[in-house]
Length: 208
Image 1 (cartoon, rainbow, N blue to C red):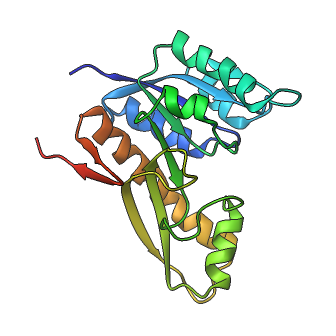
Image 2: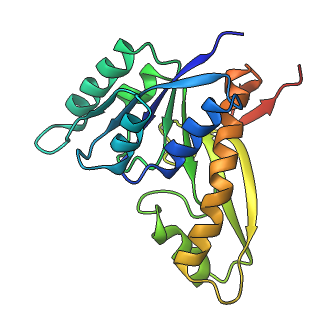
């Protein structure tokens, strides 16, 4: 089976990136991370990539339109013949330029059970605090395909996590992040195996 070529977009520490790299190296994903891109030159994700001899590039976005910035990123992804783009803590909203170019080939992870607690401003600790403030008993994480609808793309996989009475946004984030790492790598493997079929807003996982 051909191994897919994975491109990662990340803005921060890169813990999801590390989980993907580790899973690829263990043979749990039929693929390899061939390039890592960040909009933040100081992002730890870039250093994680370099530690594994993976090409890593920074494309600062200041002073550029979103389209011009994404054109540079697309050129980098194309030069590395990427099959799948993974948003791993990438804190920039994508434009139709990128989404159209990689339609059905961009996945994102979100730290809540979509469609709840998604949309503009819902990222990082903001999500977990909103969940706690609303009094939810269950939260979790979601991996979905990226579409023009922010956090509204077809859902590939979800994992529920209990919200504890004494949770803070930080403690809830820590527990969910552990599940997020596993969920994201499993979703990538399903893509690599050709087992994901999008039907409207629904993703069906095909049996072999």
